[in-house]
Length: 297
Image 1 (cartoon, one colour):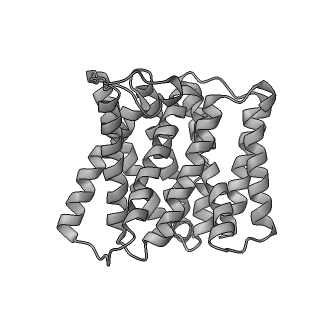
Image 2 (image 1 turned 135 degrees about the horizontal axis):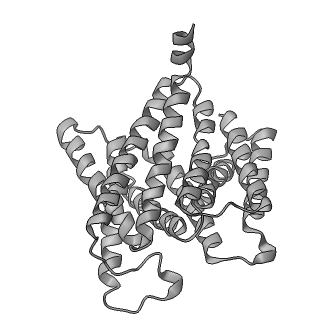
Image 3 (image 1 turned 30 degrees about the vertical axis):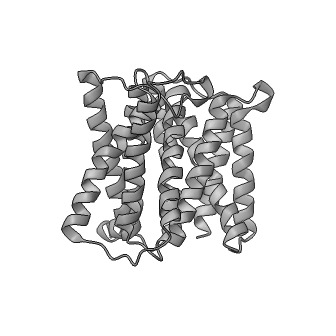
């Protein structure tokens, strides 16, 4: 009975593991953020993955008919800007809050699907999106002021949704490995360009998430970089296993919101303060929103 129950819920267990590994990836990114820019963190996060995906393409090949080059480029470029905004937030606000803002991508994606792809959303999907955005308002607490971190969080969610939506069309023309390659290549070259460019001009404060000078990592930073890469790889591996093992993608997608709980605990261990009552309620609303929307799939 227990074995049968385990097999039936294998996708859920895999996603819980994936969410924990993703939280650890964020934790090491936060540890690096104290002495390294979000631009450089994004560079190191992608450069290892670039070599891995190139090796996979060389070894196993790919099945792509091509075309839609602009969309392929846009997916990579928009995706890396979203990642840099995400890492900027991780370094400058609570870990759980940064991860919660990243979840707005699901809400934006639902809106984009309804508007641009003419997908029909039922009552509960619209209700989930509504309370999700309401949760973000509670987290931001506009009466205390709209900060740069709030903007970065919404930018991260918005651009990530644009990148995800582009994959819907790109899959018609490209193998998954080529789509991943476009992101990894952009994720390496764009931060590299930004770091080189920042040597020649004074970076305005509102662009410091995009442009920053290269800082040679210390031995401790190199350890964190390696661990960030390892846990990032484990996250991708177990997330893939979760969807492959589950009969209901919506259930697995809902469980993915557990990373907010993990990051809340890890963040407190790292020195983050507990969110106040209003922000905490907002985080709960976003989690509930994600579960509702995911279960509609």
